[in-house]
Image (tube, rainbow over all chains, first blue to last red; front, side, top):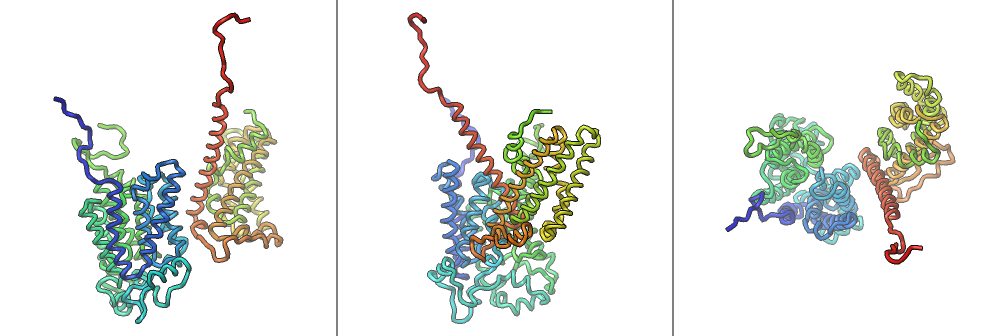
Length: 354
Length: 237
């Protein structure tokens, strides 16, 4: 009787790329629902439009590269990139914003580098930053959250939203407005308490900024689902959120007029939760080992806080993630785990084994 | 002294050994000033003039300068020509000179120029050296202008804007606006756009080279038409 010899890896998981990607898309649903509830149909249209564009671009490039289209589209990675970009873009942005951003994400940031697994930068964030740099006006026009709409008005319905997005209709007065981070940044000369008293974005909110706290809670819920499904480890998100919270506690400055804001506001405003659970957990462009991911997350958290507090942009997740992507190979080099059977960990650049 | 021919020098400068696309020399001005056609053309012409002049002079003095001091000598020759170019631009195209600013004096540090002086002009006859300067300069100029045109077109939606800075008042009507007046795509004008477009141009050149190579290889490998028969029986008369 002969035993069949099987080589490593011996532990198999039922996960494959396409399943993981599908789960990630599903996990964005709470966030998408919160966005749609608080800001109208815009985000939903963004996500659908970006997904269609992404799938078309991916198919085109894969065909040009002479690969199998069905195989590469079947891993759903293009859809994930598109969904994340669509969620990050301002609702009711003109259609060409979404299309240009998606084309950049898929064609330049992903396929030109060699496709899934070869991209050094997070494709969705590359698309977002290209748009933010190129079209500052369209990219900083957000829709006002539900609680802040003028009395008697509502967010545009689906048909009207489509007209705004595709035909260039301008939304009714009061539908667009600033984001909490934006308002907070431009309220110099006021104590934090005064800002919270005067600005409707804060005094209509429960704890962090009207509308935005729900969106962030939605992404937090989706992230926890993914974490419980072991799609990614806790190291990246905890590193980022911990560093962001720690930084904002250290520099809280007891709420003076130059305070960069409370930890609660930084954690539950802007793209914090989405960044922590959906952006920096990208397995391709982040660090590899657990310690590396923790450091990667901490780096992003610190960078987000620095840019939000002392930089020119109100939110900074995209910039921070791209900068940390640059640093990921460096982090990997110094956080190589100890191999089983060895007493000491080796560095990635060491060539000789001893 | 290796054998060179006019056609080989021309082909080298414009295509096979293009300073910007193959040698990747002089990238600093290439990336910094190619936001529009007029900037690119101005800097490209100045660089070409300096390159022709320095190549000629370096070739003339090549047998009279000792090896130990050749590089300082080359640099001083180049700096002299750059000063000439700068003064000429100040005299005739002052506005463009102001726009290009520090990048005119910085032509001195353009490694394409010193590279040609060292690699070609100091080893070849003056006629060839001057031709090499012209062709290398022209190759650099063409890439600059292509880059400037693409970035201007996609960044600002214009083509040949403010050409009057270089060609006088007649050129003020040359501007084209194919996408309408409100078009703008800032990233193409900003430094990342320069890197992206340069990368795409290099990729395009490599793709063309690869397809040419494929075609010539195919011609080389094509089997001889008609079967070759070897006679194995009977007498060969």
